[in-house]
Image (cartoon, rainbow, N blue to C red; front, side, top):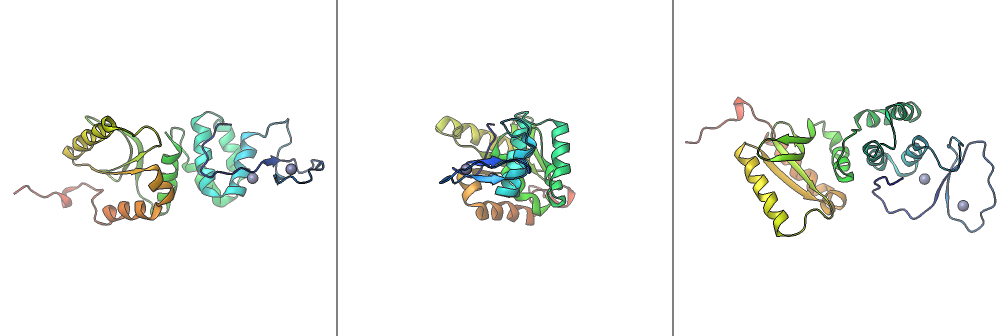
Length: 212
Ligand SMILES: [Zn+2]
Ligand SMILES: [Zn+2]
C-alpha cells in the first residue's frame, strides 16, 4: 500500500478471516493473521493496521498509521473503526496520530518522545526561517533530516542560514539525521532532554537575561 515501514521484513503476512479455510502451503514461511475481515483478495487498511500492531508492535503501528493518514489510505471513519478495534492501551496512539506527518522519521520522533509528555508542535512555520519539523515547548527546534534531501554543500549552507535566522529569534536548533533517530535513539533522547531539563525550550520572564 506504499506505507512507511521501519523494519525490513521479508516475510509474507497473510490476512485470514477467522472462518477462512487454509490451503496447504508446505515449505512456506508466511505469517498468518486470523483476524482479517475476509472481504476480497486485498486486506482492508483497518485489518492491515491492526495486524501491524499485533505483529510489529506499537512503534511500527504508529508510523504506519500516520503514513496511511498522510497518503489518504484511510479516512476519518476508518480511523474511528480502527480505534474501536485495537486494544484499549493502543487507543491513545490512534488519538495522537496526525494527518500531516511529513515523513516516517517525523512520526518516529514524535512516538519516541511520547513518554516525556513534552509540548511538541510539528510542521511549524516560523517567519524568516521557514517551516521546521518540530518545536518543543516555546523555542527548541528539532529538525529530522531524511535520507536523500540533505546531501551537498548547498543544503548544508541552507540549513546553517536557517539555524542562524532561528537563533536570532531566540530559538535553539537540534538537528538529527535518519541514522541517529533510527539506530542511535539514546543519544538523540539525551540531547533533547538535556535542553529540556535546563529549561532551554521555554521562554518567559524568568529566563530572560540582559546583555550586559
Ligand atoms: Zn504460506
Ligand atoms: Zn504480520
